[in-house]
Amino acid sequence: MIFLRYESFKGYLRSYPVTAAIAALCIIYFFITSIMGNPGMSLDAIRFGAFLSVPGVDSWGMEQPWRYITSMFMHADFAHLFHNMMMLIIFAPPLEYVMKSKRYVWFYLLCGIGANAFSALIYKIEGQGQISVGASGAIFGVFGAYFFLVLFRKQLLDPASIKTINMILIISLISSLLIVKVNLWGHVGGFITGFMLYRFFDQIQRMKLQKRDHVN
Image (cartoon, rainbow, N blue to C red; front, side, top):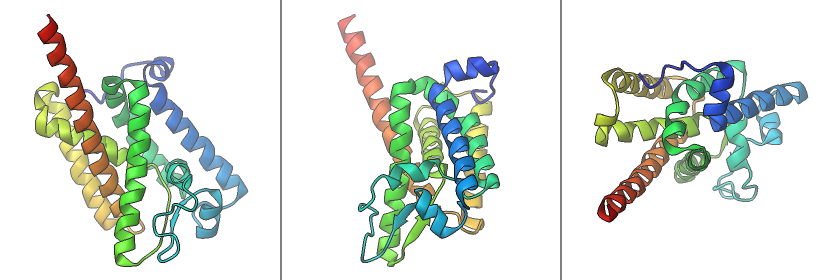
């Protein structure tokens, strides 16, 4: 089972520095925003860096593009933070290990950006605006990468891990559909971005192996 961790706390920090840093930033930022205001309220969320799109004015949120990044580290309340951090610290480490930390940090950030961009696209089509915060778009990118592995590289996973991935995908889909105020399209966008990025990563790795075999 790839999702069981046997490392000590220090071992976890050394082995998965990007995941640990992301979790730390999210936790620290949550407490800062909670002290300075209420990140669950729209005006405070915007003030602290939530992703914002306004139909007819700034549908893509490009007038303040840093919000594509800052929103990924913001959370509306403690329950929101706790849920996302549990998903992150459990499911992200194996992917960081496979991709290596330098690639993984770009993967994670691009998944979060992709989540916000896809969400902005859908809301633009619908003529609506949005205020969005949370790491879940990027985390769904992690799920998208695992979905690619289940579909095309199942031999790399043990049966228990495959069952866990399938279960978490089903539960995440249901919760995204049923829970009020969840940014469904952000989750979908992050998932698609993660799937496509990992597909690209997989192709590069296979090309490297083929070149190595050809040289040998």
